[in-house]
Length: 293
Image 1 (cartoon, rainbow, N blue to C red):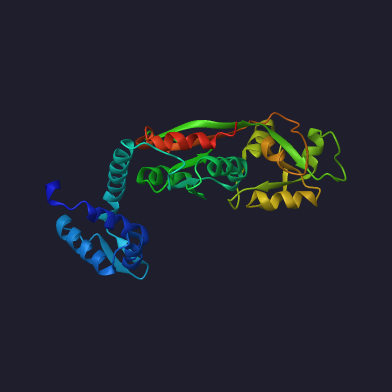
Image 2 (cartoon, rainbow, N blue to C red; image 1 turned 45 degrees about the vertical axis):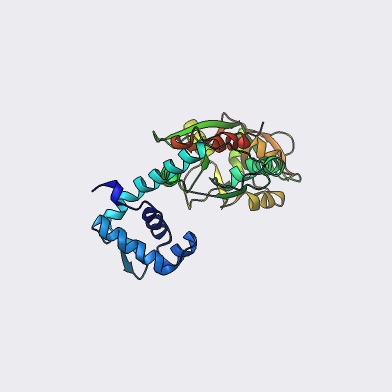
């Protein structure tokens, strides 16, 4: 098969159908008609000699062949986009880009306020879209160009990703300002005897503090497990629970904070991006937004 015989625009349609799983929605994304999408799909099917998608109750389901080529197609499209952009000067004040970044709600609390302030001052037409992508899917999304950046602990290992440290934060124990037992000091014995609040988007499993306690031969009691940090701070204000959190987060809250009474590893946050966008002028400028110092 010769590449000169293929209309590369057909791969834009292929990607849209793969993402939306629906011809009408794909047409809306591409700003073309639904018959035009159907015609493009027919042409690509004939060119590649594969149905590519099968209509099912769940939508347009990709064939094994489509699944095999989607990542390469998306990466190729991203490389073409970057090649065009690298020849352009990036003017943040005039840019109308939308930036997609994966982060959990703790990262949103720690980084978004500064980022939004800087965007409003220096790039008022750039829009930021924040949502969480699982670590298993981050590399794929970054390679496809559907994601620009990800903020996470440095546990993501992929040769195609580049990352740098954003913050290095110690933990403190946050408590209500009217706590009935603890005032200005917290012993290990008290820490282990009282109940704790733990924030996690998982149903079960240990966090870094529990792992650190395990290594010391101790275990704390989780009295309440919630999914979001914003509700957690309100719950602490009106309870006697202990909440072990990064110091930078504690500084933003109206809570009393005390040193952790044992050796706990710091929380390290890293910014990840794909190697294909490493030299991109917009990406270079935007990375500076994430630094809080």
